[in-house]
Image (cartoon, rainbow, N blue to C red; front, top):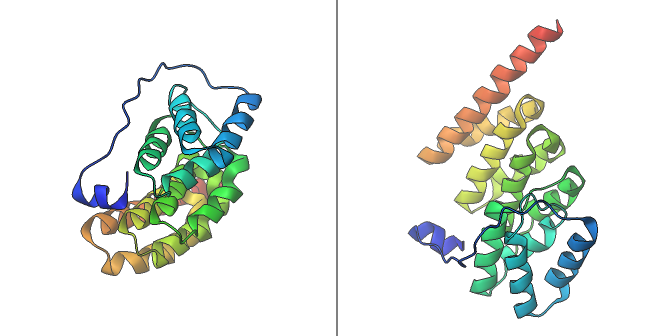
Length: 199
């Protein structure tokens, strides 16, 4: 979904039917990545449709997120749909997602990078500082909200984020304020429980 569509509450949708197929093997992912990175617009669109026919597709985060930030509406929409339903990140993709989080070329890119980092939960702890940077520096409110949510999903291991969450929370719009507050509560409360159990 483009940022304008999100702000207007509208969405361009490519109608796809999920077949709930199992996740796919490595060779298929390599082929998809190549088609997404180097193919024509038609091939990229067909590849995204193919990805949407599967579940738990990992290893394709980088090229799919980049297409979610492209200027072709049909590709943006299809990429967003595959990111919403089929694409699941793997721990090995964390460095690429961190790099995408700081990409200034399109705010959708940072939004989706934060989303996928959040899906990894505590496994994305290495992204804590980058998520804090997004939370402080992004001019795109949905990306800031998603960064706060991702920090909450990472949980107690993101304890270094609490000062940033507190600072942002003070002047944030209502939804971002709530997300920062929830993240601080989850990080702090769960962190205290972990410390008590260790003692």
